[in-house]
Length: 470
Image 1 (tube, rainbow, N blue to C red):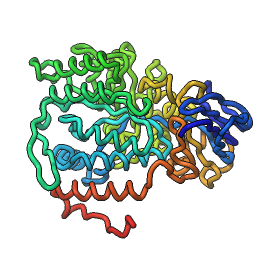
Image 2: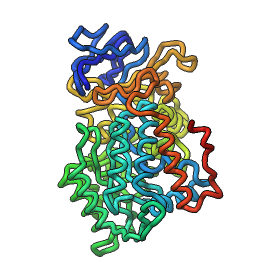
Image 3: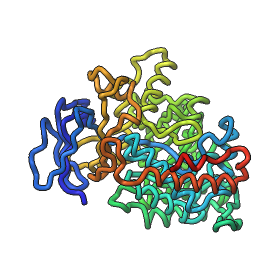
Image 4: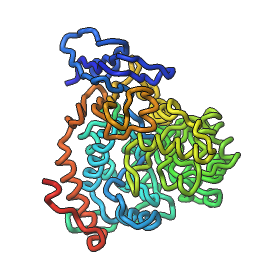
């Protein structure tokens, strides 16, 4: 049970006014931070002391955009287009509750071991295939994440109106076709948000997802048309107070949405946002919405998010992984490095996105993007106790100077030594305490094998040897 806990004997980066404490502590009671200060924490009855061993103590990282399901579709395809087709087929026709539970545990374990304590995930993805035709997939996912202990915002919502009208529902070796309607998916999303929107002490929350539509899409009229669906999703977010999430804005879509249906409530985050027009940027500034910048994503290959410019214009910009498929992990340290190189290369100026700013994007700015800055993203009294320790007694991080520069330019997820979420120690000195990693891998392997067979991919993607899991 949580009680008094201190993380001490390390360099504390509170992410408040870009200051640091050379030898400090974070004092925690139950799930809340009580104090942040210099030296060891004062004694308390029953106090547990976690020794940072001279490492770096900072807020848990915040991943502003990722996907559920992708953990078991990594590398399934020779290029982006083929992976998209395969992933869409899998999500719509080859998964069951066991898949979503296993994949959630696998992805949550990866995030935990990389120091990401909160992430915003879409319930599906690829070619806009959302598993919200019934509540079962999302409920299985949430149960899987809860078993690992990290925090999450899960976005649930409809497919595009021109998306698949039928999914396969599996029961063992038997399956049946079930109809999928965007309106019915919105009704399921409402039920999930109203019944599961804030369980597990607030570490698991739900949001509303909505596909991105072009200007031409939004001119179509009718109850099932994109404009009507957008307004219905906006109403759901407003009525429930949930975050609104859209994945894939680009080249005029923000301005088109603003002009026809609006951009939804101010509590919204738009992922990718590449090749924005001046009208897009003006609409974004006036909306108050945030951007989830994903420098490692495929969309960042095909276009550029003007993240530094948006931040200079007052737009909140958080950092996302867009993980964990087809070709990138949940490692936000890697994304921090990519963010700097991506924009430094574009402008031929390596002074862009200096280390402090990049680290803020992965902590407090990510929290602001998700509407959670009052809860997480910095180490301050009253906030939820989400804290990580980075061991920097490593050759690639040495000598031990300039800690923020080391974190954003040299560190990787494997350098995270300990993780605390809501006051609970989930990993200590690289030993996961909240789950048995081998059992997570075995469950994921079983779900993967079943999924590959159902999708008709067994000849192309052979299964792992059992010996690897013993």
